[in-house]
Image 1 (tube, rainbow, N blue to C red):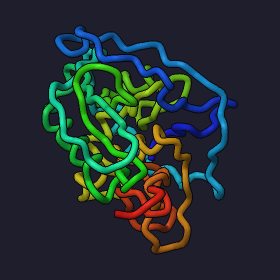
Image 2 (image 1 turned 90 degrees about the horizontal axis):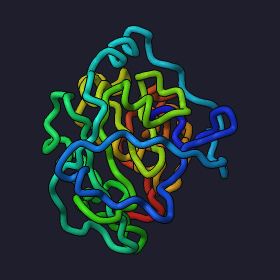
Image 3 (image 1 turned 120 degrees about the vertical axis):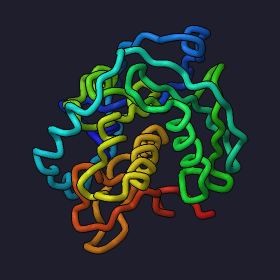
Image 4 (image 1 turned 45 degrees about the horizontal axis):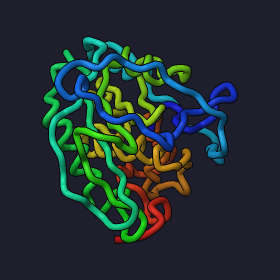
Length: 246
């Protein structure tokens, strides 16, 4: 789900990864990197055809808002992966905010396995992924506290509850990472795959989707954190979303 990445909010939306992404610096690899100032650009398209799902219960939202606190500084997680998929290569890095009490290595492993999975965004002849920890990248996958998520995602109103894609970052809310969402109760591992796939999907240019019919598997670009709209949980992109099969 998450809050309107690439969806219009007050005439703006989150930008995709820019054509000249910033390289990882020595400071990011070895120490803390200050949270950057987000950039905006005008929307191009992408809006839900039938409106967003209903919001989850207020009690669940309060749990997420207060779930985690961090230092406000990001660290790149050391490590690289093999190329997965075929087609144009997308290099990415993984970052974790300090002080969350969440293993950076384990988080990076989930991200890496999700993007390498055949059910994910890799698609024969369409795109491939490889994780790096230095040099220029197409995007970064960042785990951040609710407060830092708000800062990275501004001017969108993530309200310490949601995640976003902005300024070349898939920003994943640590409160959601540990607390999940109502539609994925008892299925936290699947929900984490959904978080990665949804926000990276925005970075690949995909907007929000709607539930096609009651009982169908939800498109990964449905805002599933807010609700499923009658669909079943769908942590992986549909073939139609991926632009290919395999």
